Picture (cartoon, rainbow, N blue to C red):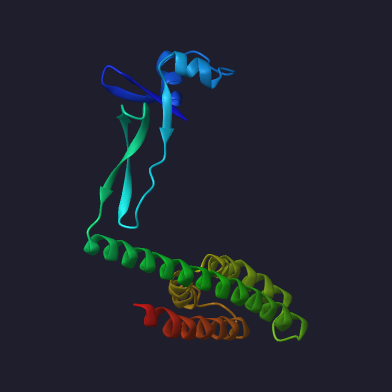
Length: 188
C-alpha cells in the first residue's frame, strides 16, 4: 500500500483512484512512485503502544507510517479487562446458543414422541407445532429469556388449548424456567 500528500492531505492509493475518477488497474509500483506515492510501513509496537490509524509522512525514511500513542499502565489494564469481559460474554453467548439448539431438538422430539405414543392427537400435534415451534426456534439463537417470556404468556393467551397439549407446554416451560433460573441469573 502506498500514499501521497496532496494539499497537506494524505491520500492512499484507493482514495486517489476515487479522487481522480479513473482506472489505475495494472499500474505497477514504479508508476505509483513516479506519481509521488511512497510506501506505507507498519510500525513495530511495544506492548503499551497502539496505532491511531492516522498516517504521517516520515521524511528521513521517505515513507508513511501510522502515528503511535503510548498507553499508561492504567490504560493497558483497562483494555485488558474490557477484552476479558467481551471474551467471557462471547463464550457465554455461544453456550446459550449451543444449549438452545440441543433443547430445541429435545423439545421437538418430545412433541413427536408424544404423538407417536398416543399422548396427543394429530390435531394437537399440529397445534403444538404451530404455537410452540416458532417460540422454541429462538432457543437456537440463545434467546432463552425471550422464549421464557413467550411461553409464560402462551397458555394465558390461548385458554382453549387441550389439556394434553397444555401439559406438554407446561413441561417445556418448566425446563426453560429452570435453565433461565440456573444459567441466566448467575451471570447478572
